[in-house]
Image 1: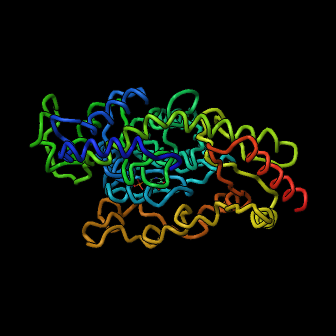
Image 2: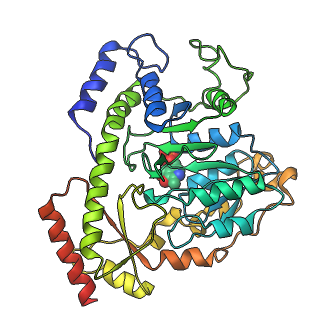
Image 3: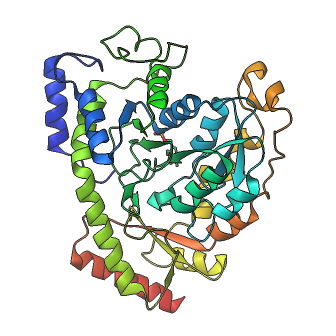
Length: 390
Ligand SMILES: Cc1ncc(COP(=O)(O)O)c(C=O)c1O
């Protein structure tokens, strides 16, 4: 989260004054406005605002028809929630290596496709856009569905198309750590009416049938799903945050580009599948070795972070997945289901060595959209010092 203030307070106050916090209402309709704004800003036919990015990922997978017997390819470098959504849908996550961009390697996706593969989840990690051209091509060749995890990439793009709108469905997150926030929240984006209808039912199965006219022109019948319905307070905040999004991205991009331009002659950065579409939240410095990366990261005033140290973003720390504990009740556990018996992989710590190696040679520094030229120049001089001394 980068910016929040009086505008959000004013919008929340309006909702509290109206005393109607439920998503479906005849008053302020903040949630409805969020969904309209998302459709317009992201140029998609359908959007569903819900409680989290994980909810959006799970709803999308279920609605795309993914379930027991299916493999879903996910990158070995993503937050654990991506892989857990696959398990929650009853399917089995298959891990793919990342490439130099730190996003999923299209070559490794191709290697991991099997007769049981039903979908790919490219993750635009740290706001770095995946190579969506290659991924969509592979999906077409192998008749696979694509769910974009854009939870760390709200508003970013690949070749001028917003992340989350290129595949069959996309998921955004608005938790506190994301580019924009409403405390906790998420959204599903799609152009597929069937996926939309099913997601509407799945994310709010006990209410969607009974409140308002939400299912008036649905051809999908109600089924038992979950309760991932959001509320007017979160929607009020998100409405303001969505209005801020493009300015935040433009300031992040300006500041990241300035720093990279000034530093290009003294250090290397990871390549990008689309530098203009990158959310630019992160400067990613590339080093020859982990030792050199650590030296830089711990230099005076640098406060860097190696992505290899980011815990639950690295597959080997996804303890419940690695231990194949897919549910509390064994009969509900996809890793023990009869339908999955033949596809449960032998997860182990060393199964994606390329990912581990790449993540250990990079140092992340945060970009601040509100840094002035003066502050940027000071930061650049500190970084140059650390690099030249190292
Ligand atoms: C890549 C990725 N996917 C999914 C999620 C889940 O989002 P949420 O916390 O909103 O459920 C996150 C959250 O950190 C994430 O970083």
